Amino acid sequence: MSALELAPNGLRKFTVKLPILPEPEECTLGVQLSGENSQFLLLKAKLREEDPYDSPLLTRLSSVVTSHPIRNPEPSGNYTFYIKTYSENEGALEALVSTGIITAESVPPVKQGFVEFPLVKVTIPLRQMAKQCGNCERWELCSDDARMKVCSKCRDESKTWYCDTDCQMKHWKEGYPPHKRVCGR
Ligand SMILES: [Zn+2]
Ligand SMILES: [Zn+2]
Image (spheres, rainbow, N blue to C red):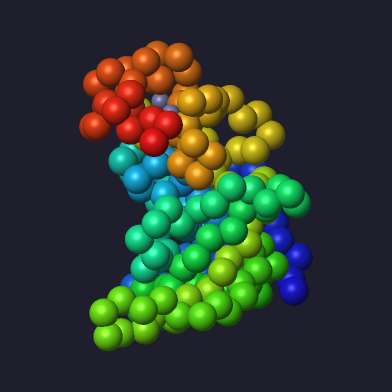
């Protein structure tokens, strides 16, 4: 395992090669912890300064599990979830495992109709998780001066994070859907 550098956003930085990318990209690892969109995300280590609309989101790794892919933290403080091993995820998993950021363990495939989909169970330390505001979608990547707060009424497996009270109140009433309709379910 090679030593990992810290990205400016405090997450560990590594280079990943994906079939969908023309060139290897430097990225960090993050997970979005918002209800319906919870996914395993790869975030760029650095934004292009010349492009004000550049987003830290590099790509999503897909899961074929229809239930919420992210479970409660285990007693160790780590999160585990299930993602598929093929097509757009191919190559990414191996890269992540070789950095030591995640561990991946084979589990029995899920069956959907006649087809079996191979899956791995991925474990990620809590400190490597990025958060995104449920209202304004701003990313918070740095674990040291983290400010975002979680909705305390959300069930553990689908927590929604907010920049501040304003974002939380706005999302509660005017979100798509309003958070009050989905929170706690
Ligand atoms: Zn916000
Ligand atoms: Zn909530």
